[in-house]
Length: 475
Image (cartoon, rainbow, N blue to C red):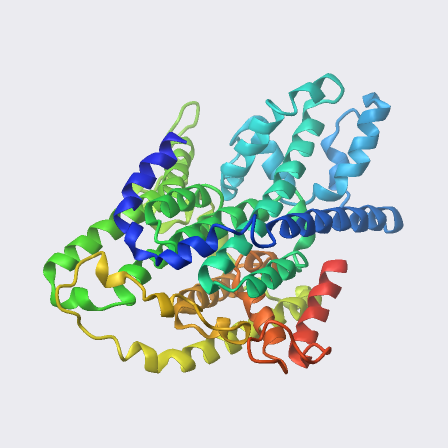
């Protein structure tokens, strides 16, 4: 709370940036709007995912049986532990083992550094605080698993609320924000959102950060972005939001050295806060694996200079990333390409449409006399991302361009460096896909106001995307 209050003091200089009517509108997300319904829907979606996963586990043999190797002496488990083990096993797969190992033992092996510490720290903290009484009935490993599952599911509910509030702030259109949150509840990566993975936690930090940036609470947003960069490395890309707001929404800094220095100072401080989690983890990994620490003989194979180690971001698993560039979308994964291909093609279409519609708007930015760092980035009330615009046109605002560009950039990174199976869950923590689908639904035959469609049929394009999402989530 003390840290948040410090950042709030820094944000006080930006208080006048947000119109008064916008401030009043966004405060009612719980009392005046459907905040309760969003929370209930998110909880129900987690229950549904739990039931489907348990039914699937009973009906289908495990694809990955490595879960059973976690328990050395399985015969010594009590009936309660056996029951809990059978329940949580569907949520403990693949990368989950690394997070659980780090939560219990810390960073022991160099490959552990591919996984950032925020999520394991939360698992460990929750297991030794709120879930500490369970240690009287279960072994430590099972308590850690239960802790990770609870954190992921609570984070998902929180991220759903955060996405809803982000939509209200950006679009000042509750119907559009609500539909986007409902679509998020059926995200294709649903099982990963409930499993012992970082997806939900990262989405929570990301959506909160985006909302705070939209509210011009830059320093508080940087604080949450720092937490996000302590969770996953791609969060450092979100620094681009600050660059966009301070340098690309208005070009008055070109004509004033004072304004340029002011903006540059703010962006540099915000960027440093935002990447602090990433840098701390890189320095920790460097000290642990890159120095010649006894009883090792000779120079460590990871003995990069620290500045190279931190700036490059390749960390101690660089040799794996270089080798897998453009090598993971092979025929061995052809069965997964279709599920991620829809997102890839959708990204291209969204980016093309959004860019072409807003090229003309970027050309009309003109110099204003007496500009400073505050007034130059203050939005007009009527143009505040969808103010006085109905649901059909919320997605057409030029202010959504940074979200579109971020999504496109991360898609290129994921396609060229990641396994095709990762793309779906990697992209699911970005809100654009849910906004675009909501836009397709609202842009069908509708009355002026666009909040209720006169046609009972969902548009064909939206229907196809919904079918893909539902089928993929069910599988």
